[in-house]
Amino acid sequence: PETASRIREIAEKAGYHPNLLARKLAFNRSFQLGFALPLNLEGAHRGPLRMSYYSDILDGMVAAAFKRGYRMSLYPYESDGANAVQQLVEAVKRRDVDGLALLGLRLDSAIPASLLRAGVPFILIGSRCKGALSVNWDQRQAIKKLLECLEKDGYERLVHVCGSSCFHDARRQNAALEDAVSGTRFASCETLEGDYSKASGYLAAKHIFGERKTKIPKRKTCVFLACDKMAAGFYNFCYERKISIPGDIGVFGSDGGELSKALHPRLCTALQPRSQMGTLAADMLINLCSGSSPSSKEAEIAGAFIDGS
Image (tube, rainbow, N blue to C red; front, side, top):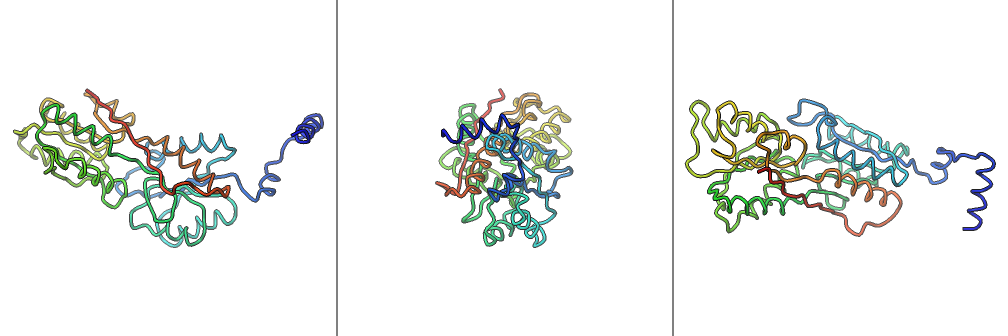
């Protein structure tokens, strides 16, 4: 410590400023993390960074990485094919980045297994692969709280409008709901297909109320939609048909972003802790790049239940 203090004192008097390139060479690291995400998202009509899911996670990663002397670089790719894998591997081998955070992967993506074989440091967010680091959202607590509220309020019927089954989050939500309804009055929960778009939420409302003549369900019904964007589409249909929420039907979403606060009446939803997921992912990835062995390969963060009533 005394020697280090003496060197810093001399450096300050001499007007010395640390050279970033020299630091990178000395440590053989770039001190950059790659935020890798697909350019073309299924069912999306805009770029991924205009979607709050990606931007919220990136926000958490940027803040956490900055505190530890790292920066974030964007690494988009066009498909899950061999070209994408090669580009991502080369980015690490060239030391453009020290490691990668991958989002938006389909369940059948070959990218994680290929990166594992190449020995590239990476972490998955919203996905899983055996042997790889991952950070995911645990929805079980929020869904359990939802069912408790529905039973307390006298709901008799639950309809689940699920997300695209090609994504890990959708499968996890379906499984969490199936476990939670067991032994409740909603054990025969109905399921409708969705794809995370407003249009699919609107179509779900058409299916429930009828495309031409509005048919209010006789049994007190709540609809649980896989994301708040789908819930917004459901709200639009109800507004057009003068269907009261929650008077004629209950609506529950999943995300807890700004959209849930903008809807009227305010949407009950499950909070997805995206910024915290990004923070944890950055810390885990930096530890991996620094040579630390993770205590656990998989991490899950529980989200809260937001009662909009």
